[in-house]
Figure 1 (tube, helix red, strand yellow):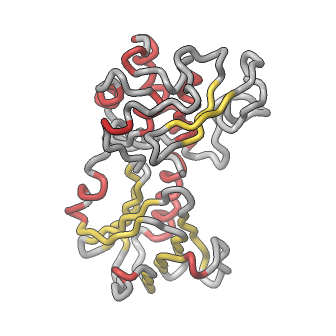
Figure 2 (cartoon, rainbow, N blue to C red):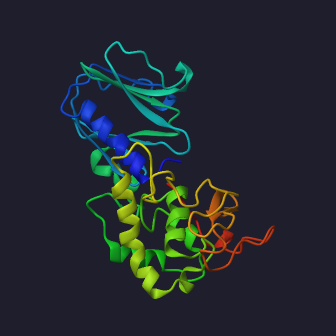
Length: 281
């Protein structure tokens, strides 16, 4: 699933391609909006809100989309061949005189009144890359339930918006604790570092093509995707296990030597499963 920095980059590409231009074509290939035509309306802007994309159009309308696991928006020049996937995967087309934005495999696509955007994104916590960023509120949200595993709290977009599975694993490594550590057991000094560290990682990567958290020339990430290779710090074998509520489990990476706290017990029940209605959106 794309993380906040990737969605921010997508919003910037859409904004640069379409903002201030009048649409010469719109094509929505989903039944609900098959007859909608935005041709002749100017695009106001496109912004990212956490992992959500909001493209605002003249007349008080907003096109809300979410990439989930494998959705994508691609921008092409006029006459350029579309290479984002087969035609049956296209869900939306927005064309200006010199650019065409094509949305592939978009699991969420809806047209809203701009004044009603909160229906789509009002549940989100402070956005790590947004103007509403509030580190104190974000930390208070994460720590609100002391028994919840830190990794799950970081992924919950109602706490803070923009962290995905990669940053979850990398943040826990940089904080020196496992993703299964109850948030109430997170040492105060490390908890105090969490908001600024999370924001710094996403800000540093929002303009990069390749995400990097290590500062090392030959290695981009400390633990994510590295199991069972050696930890870059201590040489211990990086481990991986699923973490989640049963319906949305994610592969989670950690170093058993560098990170303190509990590790998952194979086959153990998720005792938090029924206590939360969670969202990774």
